[in-house]
Length: 105
Picture: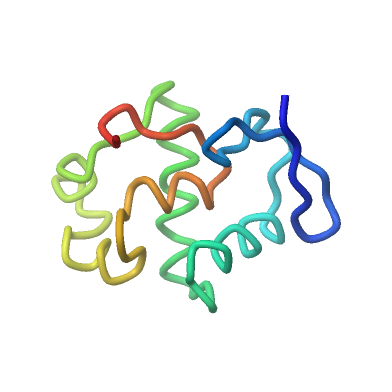
């Protein structure tokens, strides 16, 4: 298994850079991953989305789709692309320390 160092922590990652052990995640690691993804500053709104994804995954055992996030009112598609450009669910899941969503290629 591969490892990577983020914010002074060594974590287990898969070949696409997603954490394989959520219990290794913390906000400093999330911030470091965000920078790696080109997000220089995580705002409160970014963290709201990250916490929502983590709770959703914990409660449901899977990642929500962008459509489901829009339907629940957590964020609309335009806002998600604004916060996490280039692949909002893929990038936000990685920052959240969760697995890659099945809907992402």
